[in-house]
Length: 407
Ligand code: GLU
Image 1: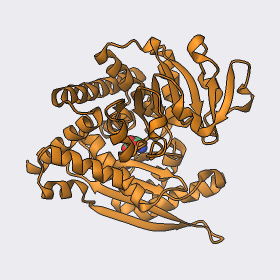
Image 2: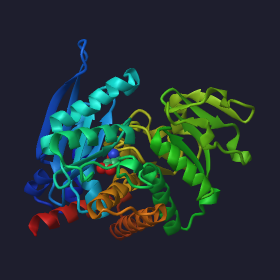
Image 3: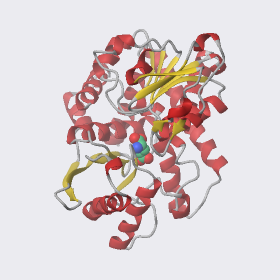
Image 4: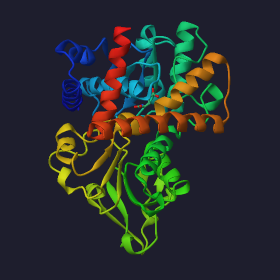
């Protein structure tokens, strides 16, 4: 993933006529924290926080728990966060954290110890104006609440503004849990509006049934009237049989969000289970990538039949696949499509700082304003320059960053 991120920034930077110095500046990482968390009995786990750039505001980005986490991945994700906050126009920078672990292997007590140990190490580098972590893959409000409590115990700061994605009772924002999936739905809706397509006509396949895939599916069906006809978890794909000739769709009842999996007894005469990667090559209109990075690569890029790809994970289409697909498909890029999470994180942070609590409606309205505006700017710029949406989003983000550097 790090190569894809670097290649993309370098290519778009060159197209913008940037100097070597500017490109180097964009890729330069401010600070890397690499440490180990010891859970006893020889169970030590590598932990990371990479603070990429704080030119436009405090470092901002999630902490993920996944066995595949390594320094290169966290670096790439931190660069994507800086580009994301700049692309949306938020006064925030970019950072990312992670621990190389599968949380499903941990007891509740060990998960709590791990969360607290992360903060014990990182607390001097975290703060409302320094670095504001949030949830990411396999982290949620419960984990963030443990982290907040540990942070308060150590530092005495009880402003709650040092983390976002907290539970509602603990200073979190209404709408934050659903924000990334909801934002993805809003990004797709705005794109469809701009190109004059009716969402009700669309069939959709969703890779990933975690938080993001769950809420995307829910809102795409409830609010856009689109039909989700295939979903997949880390083991298999669930597909509506003969979906082009009937109106059946998969409801979110088929997700077990807590286990991030599909429920077994879903199989009936209308649906079938296929292998995990079958999700990628279904003849649907939209393929939503809501699982992990680097899932569309050289070997499978040409299998994709959907004409629109919505990147809700970070970096799901690698740079090789992007170059192979960019002329035939519309790729709504991660730094815009999945920015709903960080947009509502920003709204949470504003509420914490002002001592306010906004209604769900107020949060959703603001999310829609930020998202629609970002999609429109990206779309207009792409049209004007005749470039793919991904390169347009990046060009806008880079331009904004360099403007801040000069001022
Ligand atoms: N983890 C989310 C992302 O990748 C949200 C980050 C945040 O809210 O700071 O954008």
